[in-house]
Image 1 (cartoon, rainbow, N blue to C red):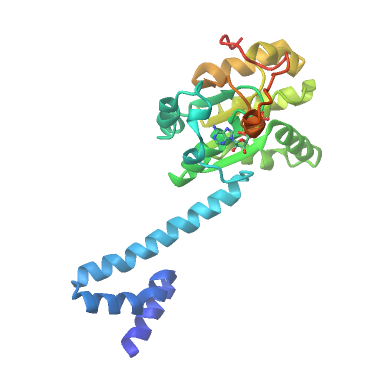
Image 2 (image 1 turned 90 degrees about the horizontal axis):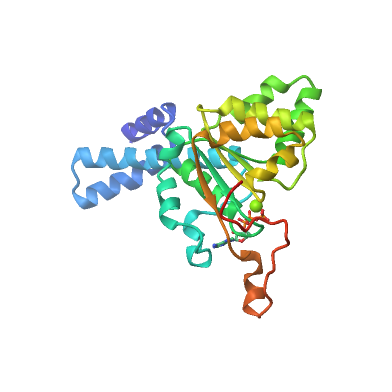
Length: 263
Ligand SMILES: Nc1ncnc2c1ncn2[C@@H]1O[C@H](COP(=O)(O)OP(=O)(O)OP(=O)(O)O)[C@@H](O)[C@H]1O
Ligand SMILES: [Mg+2]
């Protein structure tokens, strides 16, 4: 079958390896179904396209450095009634990312901030976007190391290029002035250009103390909140769910946000 071999060679040279692999199977299937030439061709190209999309998605998941693959579908909204499921559904259309708007999840430990941030990230990857995940502590450490090695400009792109930058765990670490300035520069570089999804256990009014500088904290918040969707989660820690079931109640420590006013 010279023709068959020739077709395999053409498909491989074009980089259509999945189509080449499935050529015989699809041919047999088409003969069996008495399919038209056109439907055979479109089926063959369809599997190639699906595989290409799958590989691209997998590549973007790896590049995103997401710590796990939690999805929005896995989130149990009935456990956290303070979250408006419709708002999360609306966000899952990713229209906010197309408009370079930000999403901010606030709330005490274990209420699902990281889960929802990652879920939106996974959804964005499914939609063909690029995402990068970092905790604030890691972002600062990484940029400081890069600056030390004279590679700041190159490293900077990691945080400015992706369609969505997830900055997790803002508030668990007090920042020194230099660190707060770096954080400010990251926020500035994405302002009205690319979305940020941020999670924090601290209310905005506490950010001055967190950054050791109210001027920088105000400038950061001014940009961050200009176009932002804020989800304020008040509820029990999901991590404590099983303990709650056994009758042990979770009493949040006094410094954990449990109020309606975000400032
Ligand atoms: N409503 C929920 N439905 C399903 N799983 C949940 C829900 N809320 C939280 N979880 C799970 O509970 C664990 C803790 O949630 P998550 O890490 O998102 O909390 P967090 O708000 O980011 O807390 P922290 O401030 O300590 O980082 C995760 O494994 C997450 O998948
Ligand atoms: Mg978290």
